[in-house]
Image (cartoon, rainbow, N blue to C red):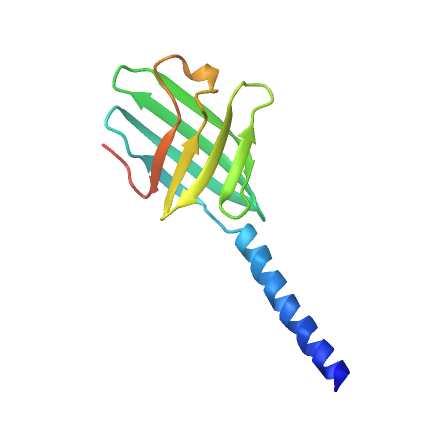
Length: 128
């Protein structure tokens, strides 16, 4: 009886652990449009393997200032932190209610003084 109890507990832990692994490597692939009155932009994510995603982000302000960046980011539990090695751009990417939020604390110095990648990006939303 004790052995049966152990098998049931181990099976339950295996299912629980598999569920956590799936949650950590959730696929956030897609195109997200920037919700902003002062700029147009998009974020594209493509899942490469597990929690690794290829990203590309582009923003153009009404004044014509631009900011773009691409690379790889690991998303765990819907949160990722990008630390640029060649560019001085660090940002956090997280998901809430179907939208992606980028917060760089304005560290992306290649963007120039009038552009930023910060903001809320909504999946499938593209501003014209």
